[in-house]
Image 1: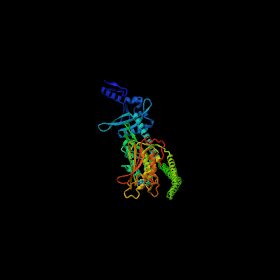
Image 2 (image 1 turned 60 degrees about the horizontal axis):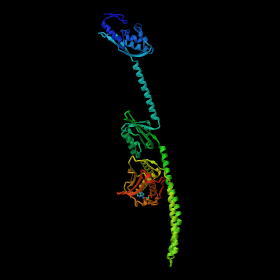
Image 3 (image 1 turned 90 degrees about the vertical axis):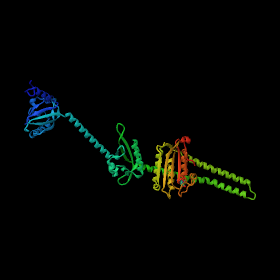
Image 4 (image 1 turned 180 degrees about the vertical axis):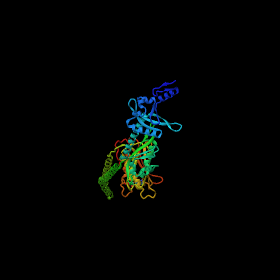
Length: 518
Ligand code: ADP
């Protein structure tokens, strides 16, 4: 059978017909060209795509379908390929029947005879518009991403705090430019716990403990410590870290930042120090004033008692003792002694008037601060203070300043007791919960106390410049909180001061407004 088909206008047999059908049904735009570059065949897909009749496309007519911006370079490349006889691959926009230009990938390969002479060129064009659009979209999103990454890096490097990232196991993976500039260290220096030398030696242990606790539990990390600047100066920083989790909740990265709080911290410390000094000064002033007033108040009845006692002695020593006069003198002695006692009662009442400001207090926090205060004194800094605080400890309602003052007193006393000591001086502070009490112990390896009870009496001191008032006031404060303060000597030497604070002071001591007990 032979039929005419529209494109070729020549009779074709069955086999050719099948091939023609395959060619015309191909999703690719197919064409052939003569060795001189004259395009002599376009498949049906080509004709349907362009909407042009075959006559208009033959030869170089097809160039009218190529986008004006692409046509020149495209035709040039094709001519070169034909001239050199090498395969050709190029992209260009081709106008579709609806007038829309679409990107096409064009390929041509030469067909050679047995002598290698080109007899035909076969070409195909594939619509790559959609692919190109998604590529463009991808490129644009990559550019957008790059831009936002660039902006983010800009933000990270310009914000006035130091940023870092760490792996789930806690190894530092990134540090911002600000960290490099502040510390003078590189990321390499931070690896394998190298960051420890960036932290003040006194803060390393606490920082590492808090950091690895956060790494293990996945809880937020927050610590205040001193960081070494490249010039060697340490500045206070508040470091915080948060974990980033995947949708399953697994930690994939830690991100953190350190904010310089040096000035704020120093101002706060100064304020607190001033407050403590003021409290101390006002207490000393009160004690001095009170001592003067006690002396003054007691002087008169004492002198009177003295005079009456001498008179009684004289009446008794007479050749005939005058019992009546002796009696009168004793009556006077009793009257004056009662007056002295009343004065003492009055002074006690004065002490009781000072009210407490009670609030829920985090005991470990308060104790650590007391240690820091003591160590801020250059004379006391030499002695190491070891601490072992069981956590968590329930918080209790106390007057923070007063109770903290007690521990400052006990720690200061312990350090003072170690002066001139032969052994390596060690002060230890321990805190634990024992049934319904929190027990805090301040232990030293000094000479121990001579009389564990008398030292709590006011004005008992063995120090040249001592007032002998610290332990008396400390015991008053603790007892006013429903607690106990006592001293004992450790079996292996040194003194041990014990403070027991009730968890529920209301039940222990029903007084709502407790005060010192003289
Ligand atoms: P001050 O410290 O002004 O003497 P305190 O009331 O605080 O007043 O202490 C009274 C006395 O108790 C001290 O002078 C000292 O003899 C004794 N003392 C206190 N703490 C200790 C201690 N840790 N080791 C030995 N003796 C101590």
